[in-house]
Image (cartoon, rainbow, N blue to C red):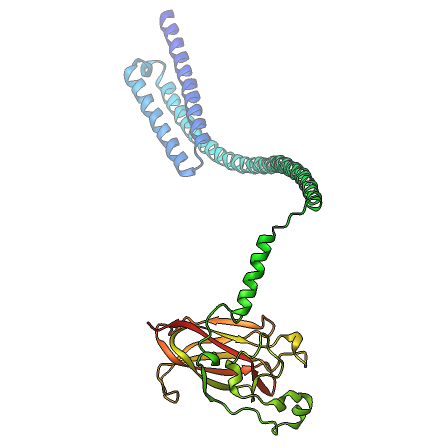
Amino acid sequence: MIGVMIHYYHSNNDRNHLEKHKESIKSKILTDDMLTSGKTMKEKKRTSLLDTFFICLKKIILFVCPFLQTMGSSDNNSSTAVRMERKDRDMMLVTQNFSNTTIFNDTKTTYTTTAIVEEKMGKLKNELIEIFKNETKKIIGEELKIIKNIIDEKVRMIENEKREMEKYIINNIAEMNSKKEKEKSVVSIDYSVVSDLIEKAIEKYDSDKTEMVDYALESVGGRILEASSDKSIFDDWDSIVEYPFIFIKPSPNIVIQRTSTSLVPGNAWCFKGDSGYITIGLSYEIYISGITYEHIRLKNSPSNDLMSAPKHIEVYGINSTDHTCDCLHSLGNFTFQKDGPSIQTFMVTKNNEKTYPIVKIKIKSNYGFPYTCLYRIRVHGKLKV
């Protein structure tokens, strides 16, 4: 009997221990599940599964230990079954309440966690901004220091170069001054060189100032074939009073004559207006290479200007003995500069592969005077072989 009581006592202790163990396992599983999920339907499913598990476990224990059902009276068994069912229902209610409470607490915890995270993120953002500002200031400061050092180095280099240049200039000035002093003290003249220069200048002046043959020169066979109407002394009495040399009224032949070594003001062929022409028969049929026009010097002009000088000139070659034919070949357009030398030569580069016995000089404009004066025309070239 004592053994049975002891066995019953141990059986009751085992049952109590099993119930406690069941409660702890169920609480732990529910707590872990509730903390890891926030969805209500999933928690309810897990709770029903736990209840089913423990009911099955209970049946297995009763099946394995059938002697537990025979202990005590039937009243105790029935009351025990009722208590077990009540406990199960209470456990389900507790589990459901716990699930709802856990979900509410989980939602509240989520909201609290979100606020904490946002607060920490804001603090982290502000800290990152401050770090970025500080690092940027440091980088800019370092770059400015580097640039300042580079500029200082460049300035030092420029100052050094400036000092070197000043020394170089001072030394050169000193050398130049010393050379000038030596040149002043010793002056040597090579009279042979001077004599050669004088002789060449005389030869050039004596050879019609150009050192080239003039095939239009009247004294070697040149002649005037045709000329535009010249200016009459009766056309403009005011000009006669102002320019009395017009009474001389030279013929067009004056432009191909060499009357003296220098030109005389007024000893020219003048025609009315700013355009005209003159046709010259050459002494030989030649390949024309250039035309030279000579005018009086400005300092020799009575009116102290050269307004009557020709400006734009066009030269034609006529490859026929009949100067009235239409076989004209333009050799080029040239401009006489009144502010330039008194003798100006214009080289022919167009249509110079043919020979011409006749040349036509066409004056297209002058420097704004009512009439135009021509002093001397030269034609240069090579003989036809």
